[in-house]
Image (tube, rainbow, N blue to C red; front, side, top):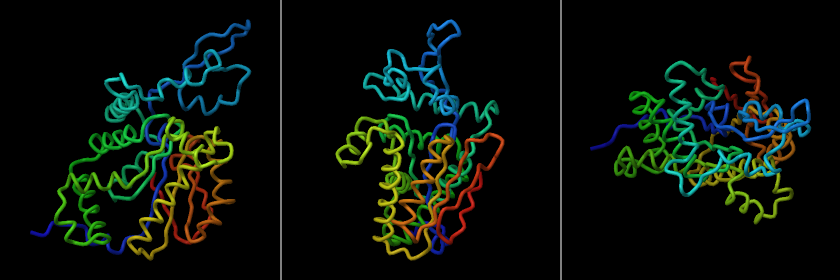
Length: 302
């Protein structure tokens, strides 16, 4: 019996996405542990949200990590062997519950991420967190389970089967269960937490200059994802225009990314259209769209 699939996939355009996670996909109740300087000169413990940290991160006169140790500051952004569940998953559940209850307005890229999953678009999560890739993937699986309706999940599977027919052949489609189709799709994506010790070592071993800087490691993660995409595209022989959309809520990261795209990616991949979304301004529901190169329009419906 032939398994059903979405035949329109055979003519679909090639759009891919790179998402920051915090305050972009979800407002996570994860805190940075800092110390704040009082008017009398004393330093006191001070918990800071990821949104606030993006604003005060350069204010070293009034904020500092405990004992000048940034690992202590970001303890909630790491995985630990003795934890029953990663803090990332615990906080993702809490964030999704607030969205479901109506207590939390969804961040700018929430609906775009949802749509990309339903359409079966390949994506990368690139975050300054320090979790293992498997932890980030579990967060995506949690998002699918909690956010997608049964009808949307069915649509996603039909789309994924359509890609299987287009790129791998009908026989492979018929052999795979729904669970195998979803697992294969999730395995194609990239999950990069750029302060994870293993990822830092990977960048250092590649002898990348200034590998100690988080923004440099983010750029490495982006190039890794695009190289990964081109590896897939070359394997399957796709011949349509390619576009890659980025979204990030940190203005410093956005500025660095724009410069990197213009000076590096646009020259290395001249056939690709790059679109950067600055989602730092909460008054702009759809963020600020900046097209860097290419010909194909990339409407991201936030």
